Image (cartoon, rainbow, N blue to C red; front, top):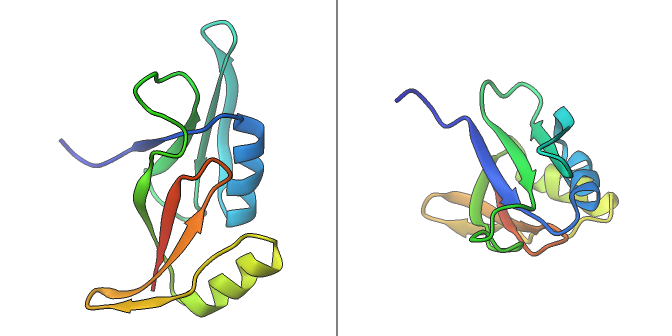
Length: 117
């Protein structure tokens, strides 16, 4: 084994989720139909190598909103919280832990992400 490549994020509405993740700072890598009526939407943060997310609606055992603990590294958590808040995305507050600062960000389906500074 070499690395984690794709993390599936279960969502109810892929287009709404895509808009949220673009506002969060992700870029679309691939958006294409597959297997009839399904849509593959794969996204990544700029500059990341080989790690991406895909917005999924087809895994019965992955309920939208069930992701908890996907951690996104940031150089300036306070700036990122302010930037996201300006875009209408609720982020934070930053909480101090023994492992650094963390701030929650919740997507439209309730998937919980954490900024880590």
